[in-house]
Amino acid sequence: MHKKQIFIVGALLLFIFILFASSAIFQDVFFRVTDKLDAYAHAHSVLGPLVFVGFAAMSALLSPFSSVPLVPLAIVVWGTETTALLLLTGWVLGGGISYSIGYFLGYPVVQKIAPKRNLEKWMETLSEKIDISVAFLFRLATPSETGYVFGTLHYSFWKYMCITLVAELPFVYIAVYGGEAFINVGWITFLTLGLSWLLIVGIALYLLDKRLKR
Image 1 (tube, helix red, strand yellow):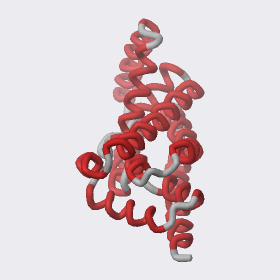
Image 2 (cartoon, one colour; image 1 turned 135 degrees about the horizontal axis):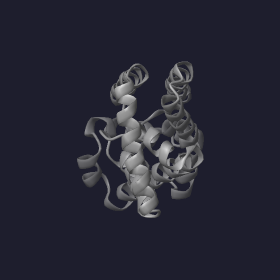
Image 3 (cartoon, rainbow, N blue to C red; image 1 turned 90 degrees about the horizontal axis):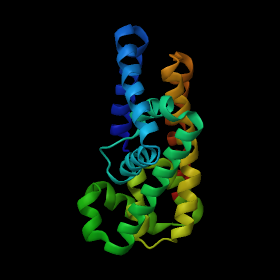
Image 4 (cartoon, helix red, strand yellow; image 1 turned 90 degrees about the vertical axis):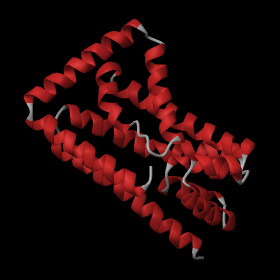
């Protein structure tokens, strides 16, 4: 997601969290929905996780979409550890698909999917210096859709996938334990994890800028 989208999603999650914490009605609705999802997931033990992984992968392909708001529901249905694994699988899978689209279909197709203005800026940044440290910081600091750029530039697929896996780990941790804090109405944990997300992105952007100026 882009900075603006991160802010919007964060603000929306904070609003929902406050509403959830202060409203017994909202909590009742939430757990009724999760009860139905739980019943569906048990009736479709393979399809349910696949659908969630699909949503997670989609968030790596389409910039307006985020799978993070679905995490609390998934935690109630599958538990923290399984949700973390499914989320990581979806995000890494989506990264691999976006890379493949960029690699095989190239810029003419990619510019129709990813925001053209950001795409040109990302490609300019990576084409100048694309060693593994720059690639990792860039992947950590920017939206997951940047897989299109790595593919278009024909960066090593396996290096990109390893970078993506490592870069997604802290965000999976934050998303899942933030979702758990949401369910348990843990104000301090929820806000701390949210700030940690912003801090990681901020530090990565700072280090990336410093690295590119060398």
